[in-house]
Image 1 (tube, rainbow, N blue to C red):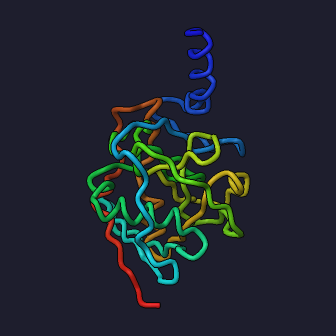
Image 2: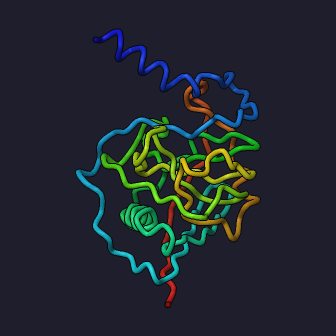
Length: 207
């Protein structure tokens, strides 16, 4: 049984082992942002946002600010989760731990290893929102309904991720900042410093 679990673990981690130390190649269309869950909260947050309102997230990084318009109408569960984590400072002083040029920049893991999570999962919300350039989407374990805290921002259109990851917003300002984030892969070069996510603030706009 132990050998079977070891084999399963190696199979799940194998996509992350394709990246050479210090060199981040363009991923194949099958590449998917993945992570392994760790515990912090006992359960997901109750619904506290108003899905009829507009929410804007400002990600303050050591490279500059990234402004993201969150789509609460089409992805209320995901936006509610992101807003609640941000308001509790969950993302403060974390890193963009997995940044692959010509693909995406992934953050939201307090451990900076790619293995961190909030201790719960949320449901997928697949809509007509697609993985075009500059969207924010939920990372997951590769299985349905396993999103937690980790997210990624796309550098290019990634249609192979449609129906696999929940898109819940779009960058409206600071895409140049996203592209300036340090390339990094925690599975191959964990000691290489990632760009810092200093703080995430949320602005609620009137209906």
